[in-house]
Length: 125
Image (cartoon, rainbow, N blue to C red; front, side):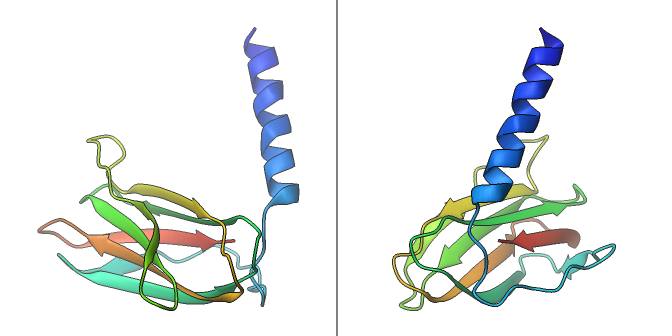
């Protein structure tokens, strides 16, 4: 049973990675990504252009010091996706998906909801 579940998960991950949207201007692959620091109650924004009518994904993972929130805003300032539900085990592991209606720039913001600094890695696709 475990082998069947593991094989299904691998198959699902392969299908998702082949069918996922990409940025209009792809980023160069990086080796070991550095963790981005964020101050207490701070905000870090990442702006990029995403293709229209293709699922976009943003993932971030912190080091566990504080709870983080994830917000995606379109060019008009509308929040189109968010992940700010916290849990003691996964308070700084974030994931959002959205389908851009038009090809435009989106701002992906990571917000620190804690009294301490945190560091996180982020991936946009």
